[in-house]
Amino acid sequence: MFASPASFKLARATASSGAAADQGTLPEWNLADLYPGMESPAYAGDLARIAQDCAAFAQDYRGKLAQMAGAPDASQTLFAMLQRYEALEDLIGRVMSYAGLIYAGDTTDPARAKFYGDAQEKITNASTDLLFLTLELNRIEDSVMSAVMGQAPLSHYRPWLEDVRREKPYQLEDRVEQLFHEKSVTGRGAWNRLFDETIAGLRFKVGDKELSLEPTLNLMQDPNEAVRRDASQALATTLRANLRTFSLVTNVLAKDKEIGDRWRGFSDVADSRHLSNRVEREVVDALVSAVRDAYPRLSHRYYKLKAKWFGREQLDHWDRNAPLPNVPTRSYNWEDARHLVLSAYGEFSPKMAQIAQRFFDERWIDAPVRPGKAPGAFAHPTVPSAHPYVLLNYQGKPRDVMTLAHELGHGVHQVLAAHNGALMAPTPLTLAETASVFGEMLTFRTLLAQSGPEQRRAMLAAKVEDMINTVVRQIAFYSFERKLHEARRAGELTAEQIGDLWMSVQAESLGPAIALREGYETFWAYIPHFVHSPFYVYAYAFGDCLVNSLYGVYQKAEGGFVEKYFAMLSAGGTKHHSELLAPFGLDARDPGFWQIGLTMIEGMIAELEAMDA
Image (cartoon, rainbow, N blue to C red):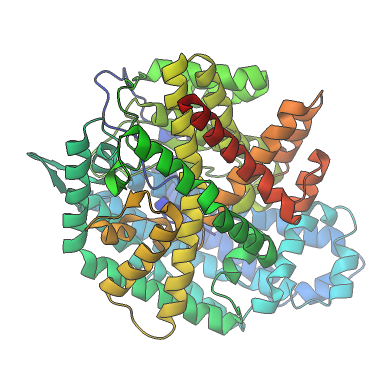
């Protein structure tokens, strides 16, 4: 129903390169489109209204759905009920979006933390009155429900109702569901918040400076090797000093998930994620298998080539994302970045550029790095009655431009899907990367076309590294999570045991050309995905391979691609991935599907090798 700020849209955990000298004026978002301020009467009024409306909704409908479904006017009455429920969901989403975005702006501010925590608690209490709806819907006989949701006007909500029915085998008795829901604030939600506030408060000593996480990660891509090494050691030193906290958070949340999965009857540690993603386990297994089999052809091959560029047999782990030697790294001020992304979008479709333009013109973006601000980047859709917001930590490097293109792609997708309403606009994670990665690819191609030979090599290398980070690294993350959650079932894990699991998957995925030096065993601790959204990470690889396949279709298409692409984005959560990909002649259930995307990465590596020949 609602999420922590860090799970709005989890972007890459590794960020861009060091700070640029002059980035221009960076925008800060205007949240007044949601509420005028934290103390505004409008916000307080909506909080009170939610409590009243949720109670009234329960009073009017609880215990009555089976009878309503069997009545002659069932389609009309159930449709009216769901309209009312959807309006409530939109209002709840507006309140929690505002509270979460306020908190994300400075997670170290006690006033903001309290504001977010109070909102979360009040919304959890009020929305307890809504739990009965999906539970009762799923107690209606299949034949009755199938008949009534096929009739207008209820047929409008059929995609959402079908999704609800998929949850039926894993539902619990009403009082247990209520207990799980109410305890989420003091359970998973509290541990998520502890992680967020701990990470935001950490400081890493690099030279004579004490930096927060984001700028420290950025230094891992500095042109100076000594700076990269010092940043890596600073990360390891501070993370090691806090491993007791991070290990406790990880152990508690893994156990919490195991309890929930056991009660609900999920057999595999990742099955609940697959269900929420509306993707079959065998599809994910095929993706994971294809990527792991490709490690030697992708990451191992590329890092061997990169080590050669640096005149070495092996690169230290802090050099993995280092800029190429003897190639100046260009800086992009904000206006440059804005122009590049909008031009790339516009060349593909003026409509795409027009939607993205609104994010700049109407202050839907928060770009500066600030103490306490949530690290990384995300695009949060808020609610269909409002509009998305984008958070960045912009520092002027090419990867920052790519991140801007990526998050704006999410924003465009969210705008296009909003017409489906609060219940059906949200897109499963496996399809949520469709516009973001595509927008990134459009921008990359624009930058590449403007580059000379040396810059072209640097751009291609950077793109290959991004794709390895998105595909190989995220599948390694998924493998790590699987090992961790399976091992946790046998008992609590020490920080050393967690580190050993981390190192095993990293060594396998990165290959022999990357030397994992002392300290790297702690790097699992700062990845927010593991805390906020277990098994989220494979969605990145799914999305990247899917978009590579789509982009291949686009390059060959004679016409009609743009229209089909926008229809895909506009569908939101109303269609299964098989329906959405069919117009492009693609099928994620075909084992060969994943090879299309992986082959594109191989082709770029081959082009880089040819430049060295």
